[in-house]
Length: 358
Image 1 (tube, rainbow, N blue to C red):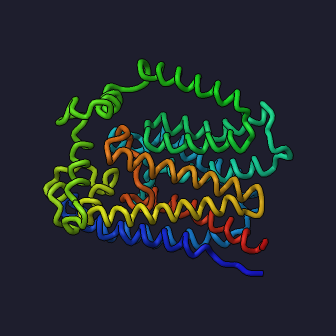
Image 2: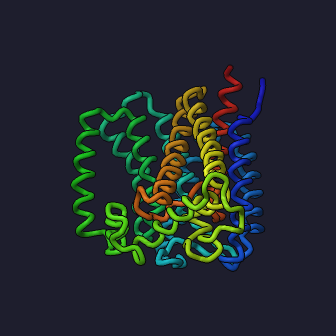
């Protein structure tokens, strides 16, 4: 019996983390914090967690799923009651000198719970009541995160909901109905839920020159940074947009713009190649998993990370509104990095099951 990790997935993770460290170090002076040491510590912790979770059997994940899910939901409730506000969002929970973003970790618990729920269904196509339960498993944390309000993280729960309904065998006619309801809901939300600055971000995408020094400033500076990189880039620590503080949130939401400015088209292509390899290996794990449980887990993680990568890059390039969705494994942040590594550890556990079954 052979137990080994997927070396290509591991290579992609190390490559992305390796690219993020010099990028964050190059903007540490601008941000005023030593980002390198913190990200290095979080990266080491994340890789250790990835390796540990990769060794857990899938049946144990199935048994632990309710506990992980309940802990995540409880943490989200505690955030609403006692959370620390940063940047307008009450998304942080502080315990002594340590603080974290429970919404990131609750997403991992949600993945485990959906995987366990679908794996225990005897029918491939769920009934109406079962479908509602599956949707509620994802919808509960999503609503709690939206109430913080943390729109960026809340959006990353949507692909989990979509994959849950798809794997549950939702009929095509119902999909069309959901699209119609979603469209009507978006229209109603535009007039009742979205705040003025949310609307400005959307309108700026449709009309980039609408407010170049207000709502459109971030995206405008990001596009300048990406374009100024040219073929080979200006070098780390030498980009005018990042070093002269024109580019905001350069260590979080717009970290890819800093990398593109520094390394140019060649560096940006290599980084995108690493993400393509990462997502491709997750897809391979889902397609060749030795069980329905493994397929569901890998598919959920793949949908989550694909959505996050696409939305962040679309935001950086001005194709999508600024939402606060970070680039996984690359943007600065301990909660995001560790939770992403935990999810990838689960995928590696699925991969190991696949190898054993061959």
